[in-house]
Amino acid sequence: MTGTPDWTRLPDLACRSVGGSVVWANDESFAERENLILKPEPRYATYTFGHKGQVYDGWETRRRREPGEDRAIVRLGLPGVIRGVVVDTAFFKGNYPPFASVEATSARGYPAPGELTGWEAVVPKSPLGGDRKHYFEVTARRRYTHVRLTVYPDGGVARLRVFGSPVVDPELVVPEAFDLAAAENGASVTGCSNMFYGDPGNLIAPDRATVMGEGWETARRRDDGNDWVEVELAAPGVIRLAELDTSHFKGNAPGWASVRGRDARTGAEFDVLPRTRLQPDTRHRFRVDGVPEATHVRLDIYPDGGMARLRLIGGLTAEGLDVITRRYRELL
Image (cartoon, rainbow, N blue to C red):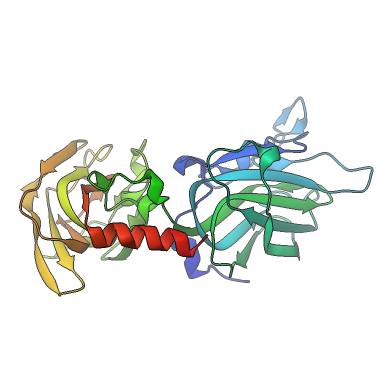
């Protein structure tokens, strides 16, 4: 596949920043396996030598002198449906693997790497080139918890990206206290006015942002309008607490913000949080009372700027819990 597919806008289920981990590799003689799932793009500096040779920002195995192949297993930080995989051989020019494949499996609990079974091919053995990104669309529609990258016979891969849609386990859901806007629970961004400096998907990512670049930020407006982002909630629910976090945005936080709710089943729209003044670099939390059931929300910021996170804590309705449960069971 060439170009940049639309599915690369989805969350990276394997990324370290969402809790992914490279739990095993059979070899990492030249470069550590943990580099595979780092969020930043790979870097390279010439004549940077360590005890194992030139330092590479990726996973690199030794040169094989016997038949076989090398493997690494990644536990997804966000279990879910995989829509596409990127195998990036950035800066590996004379030492990239000529072929690679990706398998996936679904496991309950927290098994050790050697206990994982039921591997299914999601990317068949495919040719690779040096110093480039390879895009592979995945058609399997199952919920996976782990992936296994195999390189044939050896070599280096800078990054492994596993893009898809998170699917939460209903056994881990507390219906009365649920983040309706969290990507890890199944929420998604469906539209925004501008994402010049930062992806709106960052708003609903797990954990708190550690730097400004981990939030959503728009260009400076030179008109009378304002910027906005729309989120489809993980399931129908009633919002009881809204958190608007401008952490790390100091000279570029919005001056004000509002949140509007919508019920796609009836077309009803309503205020969740009226236009409210914000402070820079601040985690704002607002109690919300008497709000109807919602399936979508729209966050408006005035006039522009950046925000780190949006959290909408509330209760799942009976229908909402059924949506979460059916989504999970249909993908087993």
